[in-house]
Length: 351
Ligand SMILES: [Mn+2]
Image (cartoon, rainbow, N blue to C red; front, side, top):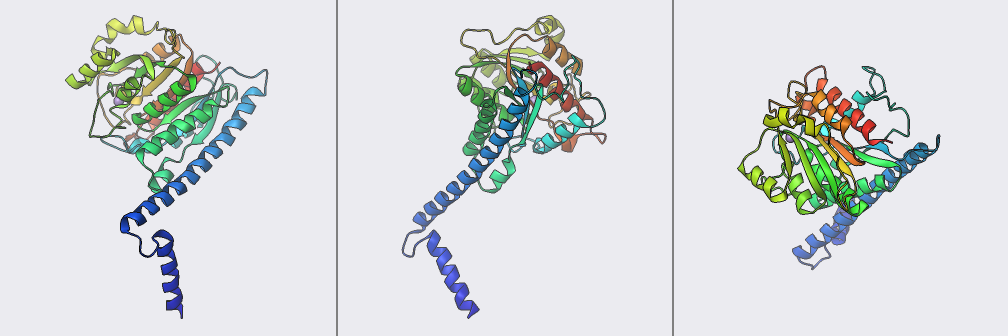
């Protein structure tokens, strides 16, 4: 009797996917449709969850002492599978968050902003990248989900997105979202050992070695100012030439320092603001050993802060990416370094 019931149940399941008599191709198509509509439900639920959190944070930021103009808002994007060497950055956001708040230091930034002030700093949590990958989501839909999540943060003034990655591939869907939302390009200040501007790397359109090619070809940025670059080949130089990128190589840093410490960005015609993207490997590995691509001869922490703190411009968003906790040293030094980058960028963004 149980066997009969089991066979009946199995027949019902099969017929719900592929009605008897239909071809295998039809059945496959049906499964794809069912899967995609199921994914849609999960995506919509995730975006709704994010929306409710952003709504609450915006209310809090607006609710005291006349509110804020810009509240830097952490959005964790734990995506590491577009890395070409290690996937560890997928584990970074919770560790960075812990390092922001642990008792190793107080909550006041260098220039005196207090991160416990809800007008300065908010956090809307991490988005469920791995959950969606477990459901078989396509790469295009996953990157669209990242963009849609950023737009939801921006829907809730005064919140402005400060992305904690993740590998560098996420900068493309983030900047695309910001540019689409603001209705024009941004200028980008980009700290990195690498220009990340390959037209094609490993045949992965979304490779972490290509986000700035995607951004420039999509015209989501006008000026791209790169600092800390010290690993660049002929293909990279051709791309930099093609897109008119302002690349400041590390070998010329002593000469370029004055210029970089007096930057004004985001003022060109039609430009909607400044985006700051910080790859942790822009720092010399002596300052930040927990990264996937160790490249000696980099910036000091103070070099980055001198450029960032003196920057003039309306910062509409930013990211800190490529911290790899799996390769960090045992006292978690790099998580504290990445956390301080987030804290100081948050202080700079907020107003
Ligand atoms: Mn890099």
